[in-house]
Image 1 (spheres, one colour):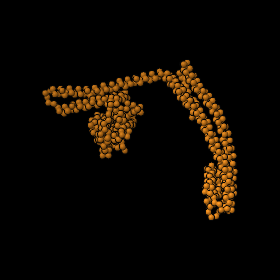
Image 2 (cartoon, rainbow, N blue to C red):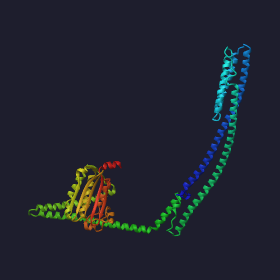
Image 3 (cartoon, helix red, strand yellow):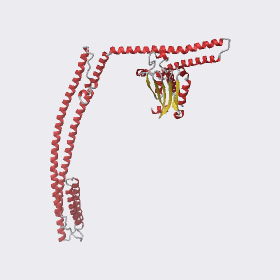
Image 4 (tube, rainbow, N blue to C red):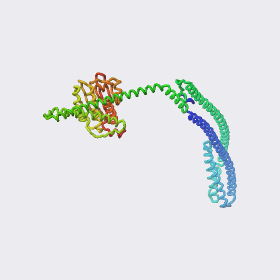
Length: 514
């Protein structure tokens, strides 16, 4: 993406402008500091060179003075037997020590350009000084006097002093030239930096003004066209960012909302009508589902009451059959009420998960056995595929898993006639898989998309033909999610449906990792 001023917010533009100015200012300051440092370094080096030259001159004079003094003393020693006084001897040795100190100081003022010269000087001067010290120390003794024809002579030392002095003079000229070049370069960079700063600042100001004016012009044009009634006009918000871009996008959103207001109202009305229709269908189905078991309970209860009121013997088989019908109807009624209450708890967030260790294979088997009377209603056959030993125990909510299997099995029995229902349970890694497959009426893609919605059934006539309230599968989906799992559906119209529930083996571990 190409960076343009329009792509930045006003705040970002100002920040960028300020950063650019500060950067240029910092560069100028850094250049000035560098120039000052370079000048200082060059001046220090130049002063060291001058000081070294002065020391060389002093050393030459001191060496000459001491040389002449030693020659005089050596001559006197050969012509007379007069000893050298202690004070004179100490004074002469002190002068030699001063020469040593000057040599060491001279070595400290050297550099890479004078190290070799100083080392040669130090070798010759050191030997010369050693000879002079021995001369003074042995002056009043019978030992041999100073050897003026040794290999390292006074003339060698003087020559090496002159070589070092010439080298220092050469370095002084170089460093003086370096100072001049540094001053010239620093001045040039300072001037160039100052001019560049002014030019860049002016360019940034112009760019900032032009980009801001362009953004405001686009915004102004959009507002004017909107005010004239053109609700289809949209400001190109991609060209602006930050506050102006936000204003442009806000304006476009406002225009879109106004433009599509009627469509939104119509859509909302349609949704409301659909919701009302769904609620009406739900209420009708609930009324039907409630009346059916209630009528059965009332009817069979009245029959039992009449039988008990007769003096004739009671047909115990018929009596038990009627009681069973009453109990079955009561359970249907209780299941319906429980579905409504469960859905209410789920929607209000009051439904809790209670985990325990249990055998899911045994639970699935018990549910299928308890609901086996539903098979005979539509002449269906049941096929169980459960390996209790392979699955083992799981840590989950027994009640919710029981209701999941109950609802899926009941649905399969309800929508299958003269067919087969297969229920399987197996373990796959760390998950429990429960699958319910039927050969019933099946569903198309549109029906599958809304089958898990509360108060909604696959078709408007489903409740009338097959009964139910449309809550069972919605509760199954919500329970699966509460147990950390999910449910999948595959179905073909006229061939049947397959529901597969997947939940973790250890719900407690699943919560801990989450």
